[in-house]
Image (cartoon, rainbow, N blue to C red; front, side):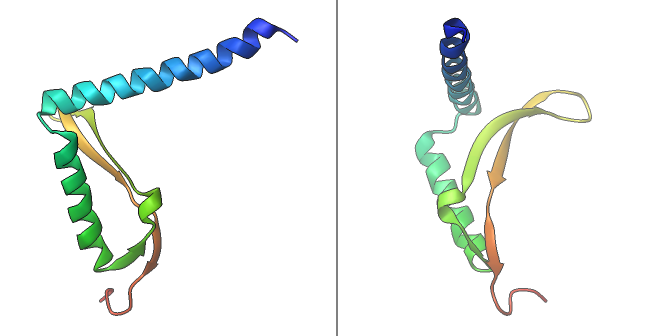
Length: 94
């Protein structure tokens, strides 16, 4: 068993997690969106979607990231929402 490989895996994972967190902080800063605003937005999204379906709020993941516009490849902020749907509410589908 190679002890260096054993310890380097955890270190590499920690490094990647820290790197992703730093990216998110920079994106929030550049988009001029505070964490408080993102929480308000998350609450609004939950409220609207909950009118139509039952969702798993604990599994909900909303984050701000960066993507590139297709037309001119300009970097722009993007809101990504992963919303686990448990079931549709009665009468919400027409």
